[in-house]
Image 1 (tube, rainbow, N blue to C red):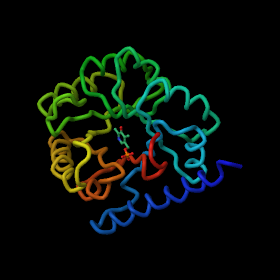
Image 2 (image 1 turned 60 degrees about the vertical axis):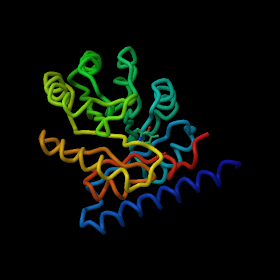
Image 3 (image 1 turned 45 degrees about the vertical axis):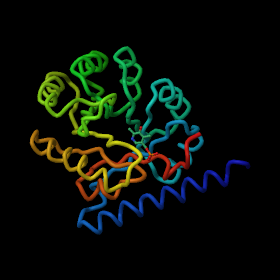
Image 4 (image 1 turned 135 degrees about the vertical axis):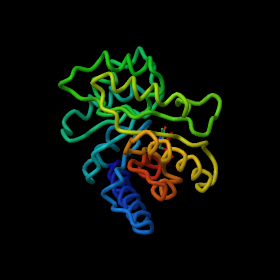
Length: 227
Ligand SMILES: *Cc1c(COP(=O)(O)O)cnc(C)c1O
């Protein structure tokens, strides 16, 4: 089959990413079990997700609502698969995401909290993370650190489960350039008594783990370059 080689590549690259996580944890004295890997499958086919699932991966991240919904349908038979939504979410799409995702990592406004909360019932707990624009970049998703307290209160007034904070540092720089952003996110989480930190991608997951990441979101290092 034409795809066999590509699929074994996914398994090999996934193993390499897990080895990077283990090595980073060993260097800073952390338990590798304290770092969850979200395999970011945006733009990749359902067959690639299936290959990663067959290699033991269970949590996947998607950025686009339509793509998430279609892939979730195509992969319904993978009963242990859990989706994290990690893209910019418009309020009018909250319903579609809430129906498939286990966790929405990119909540950044009170209005979005309310839109998502309206779409869940208490029997299906939906986890959320608050995306913070710690770099203060213009044109970027995420709340400011100053907006966090109001957002935390808003989530706690709903049945949504607040897991922690998420950030995407400025792209295209040296991995080390992410460190101050990761550190700032960790300090914010500490201030607000939140445990989970979703930070670190293919290029900078080691730095993120050193700074306390509990979730790393890795795409290209597992699936190869996106088309
Ligand atoms: C695409 C994406 C990732 C994965 O990025 P890679 O560099 O391919 O590992 C992680 N987080 C978010 C929010 C993304 O959009």
